[in-house]
Length: 312
Image (tube, rainbow, N blue to C red; front, top):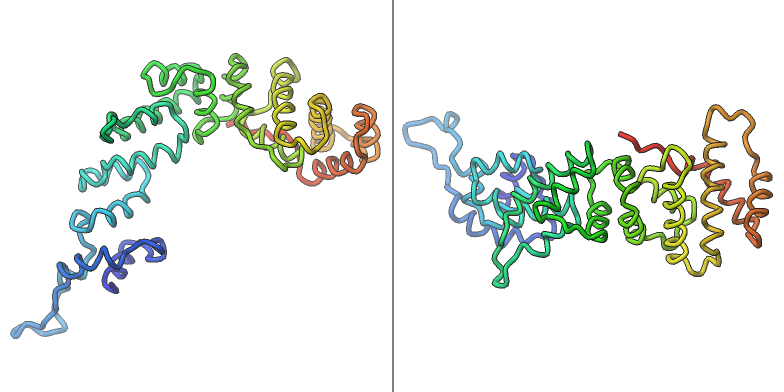
C-alpha cells in the first residue's frame, strides 16, 4: 500500500485526493503483481544498481480500471484527448466524457436520449462534448447561430424551457451574449428567470445575482423593463413572507439601479444621502419599512452596484 501511495506522489497525485476511495482493496492485486524484490547482483556493486521496474509509476492500463479512471477524470478535455493516444480505451470511457460534458453544460436535451432501453449508449459523449464546445464558441460570437447549431443537430430541443435550462446551466456563455439573445426571445427570458432561486435573499443581492447571469442593458428601455418585471414576479414567489407586492419590488429594483449609478459613478458629484433615499423610496412604495429601505442603501454603499459590468 505504501508503494502505491509513493508512486502516485511521483506523478503529482496526492493520496488525500482519494480519501474515502477504496484504494486498499484495489491496489492489493496490483501490489502483488508489480512488487519485485531488489536483490544485489553478485557481480555488480550495490551502489550502482538501477531502480527496478516496480519503483516507477505503472502504465495506467495495468492498474485496476477504477483507479485509472480516477486519475484521468482530473484532466481537462485537451489533456484527455492526448491521453487517449496512449490509453485509448480508458481515455475514451463514456463516463469520463459524460462528467466533462455535465461540468460545463449542466442541462442539454440529448442527455435524456443518450442511452437505449438496454442501457447501452446511443451517442458518444466525446462527440457531444466537441459539438457543445463548438456551439459555445459560436454562441459567444453569434448567439442565434450557436443555438441554431445545437437545435439543428438534435442536441438541444427548440422549446423555450429547454433553451432556458441550457443558458442557465452553461458556464461557457458570456452574459452580454445571453442578453443579446434574450432581447429577441422573451419567451426564453421568462422561463430563465423562473429557474432562478432567490429564496431568503436580500433584494439587492438577488438583483446582483440575476444581473451576473444576464448582463443589464446599457440603456433603460423595453428590455430592462421586461427583465425587471420577470425578476419581481420570481422574487415574490421565492419570498412570500416578505410581504411585498410584485409592483413594489418592481419600483424598488429601479430605485436600487438609480441609487447604484448615483453612488458608484465618478461623474455624480453630489451623492444621494441615506436620508434622501429612504424618504424617496418610502414615498414611492407605501407602507415600506424605513429600516428595510435603510438597509438597502447600506448594501449599495458597501457592496457596490447591483448591476456590475460583465461584458467580455
